[in-house]
View: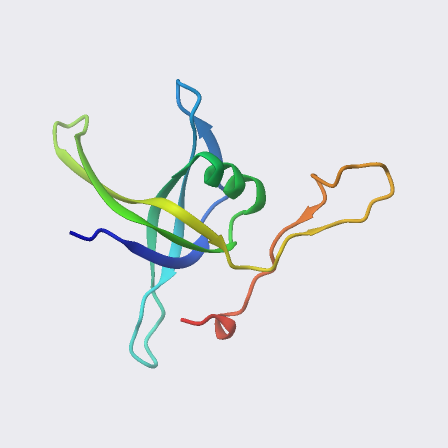
Length: 134
């Protein structure tokens, strides 16, 4: 059986790095993915919840922000729980195994203040819709 998801989209908010009680890091985020529409129809998007762990989570939180274009590869996971009103609620998310940064490469400022450059990362620029491959 195959459970594989490959998506390209933009982060809907800045990734927030979190850790479990045992100290493992993870990052929950969502991406906006354009839906195909008929010519002349209004564009729509799907908002996909995702999570990544470890090294991937650290890099996503460090180098990407809201609006950054990324590619994700992973598996779909559905879970269920009972809410406060005793109703069964289903949740679906992508468990990311690989994330590719697709926007412009971050550029570091050449500051002459002895800084190591970690805080000189400039965010990715935004592409217009005409420049996107979908």
